[in-house]
Image (cartoon, rainbow, N blue to C red; front, side, top):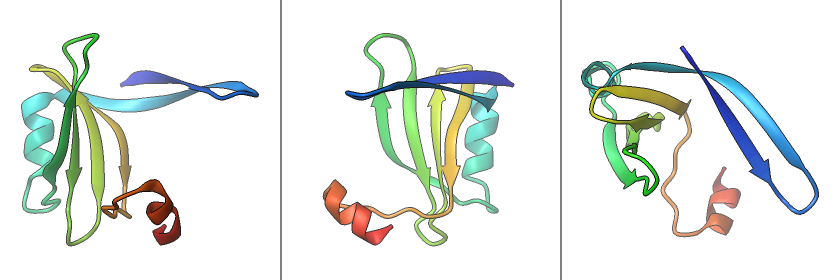
Amino acid sequence: MAILALYFTNSTAQVQVEKPIICMDTASLYKSLTSEELQEQIQWAGQSESNDSKYLLFVNKKTKTWTFVQLNEKIACILGTGEKSIFVDNFKTAKKQM
C-alpha cells in the first residue's frame, strides 16, 4: 500500500492530505475493473508530461460506478472510486446534478 500526498492550493490556505492508496500490477487491476462483476470500461485517458504515468477513468455507465487510476506498464494505483458518475458539458451543470 502506498501513501498519496495531495496539495490543495487556493488564495487563502494550503492543506496537505495523506491517504492510503491501493496499488497492484497493471494487468491484474485492468482485469479486475473490466471483469463480469464490475464491468467498468475506460472512458477517459491522459498522460503526464512530467513522468511516464498515464491516467485512466473507468466507468460502468449502467451502475454509475467509477475508478480513477494512475499507472505505468508495471504498476497501477487506484486514486479514487465512487458510485455516482455523470457525464456533463460543464461544471455548473455537474453541480446541479450531484
